[in-house]
Length: 257
Image (cartoon, rainbow, N blue to C red; front, top):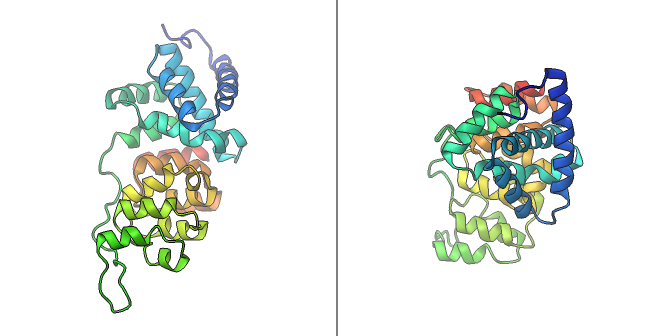
């Protein structure tokens, strides 16, 4: 039987806060994001009581992120990835549990992750970098250029469609937040590249970059649902004006109201 089956609504809300607070303390004691994500995955794949506990904790993390709380900012990405790394069947099962428990942030993230192809797809729109004579650089030349410590060189590659070029750019120590914002604000943009930015251990934690990823209709829908809690009220209104806004994302935004 579920741990929450015999609790009244007021008692249940109190229980959620207590459980979430203890879980956040336990997670913040772990030194690495990977360890935090793995612990949440272990709970999510465990017995029902552990699954519910993990879902309450993740909902609290998303809620604190909406309020710019420290726990929300530092635990946001491992919490999100712990949901995304689950099997399709497990995500479907937990989505039902989250709906019953009225954990709207978690439910929206799980729902959107189960909807392949729900985000816009970028075509072959990018302009490839060329040399001084106008010759388009080969893939090998562009990948090499992405490693060079030159802002001018990096500027030429911001629209490159190759994920390896982008990987080298993101690893370049001379890359700036201004340039990353240009990449994740570009429309259209490759969903794979936007996901790489979200996963990055430095850039993925920057709040301005998270907001840009959420506002970009070419970002994977599951990421947009997870990141909507980082938006300001005005940005939420901007997002709600988006043409054909996906229902899971609309639900997640309404939860913030």
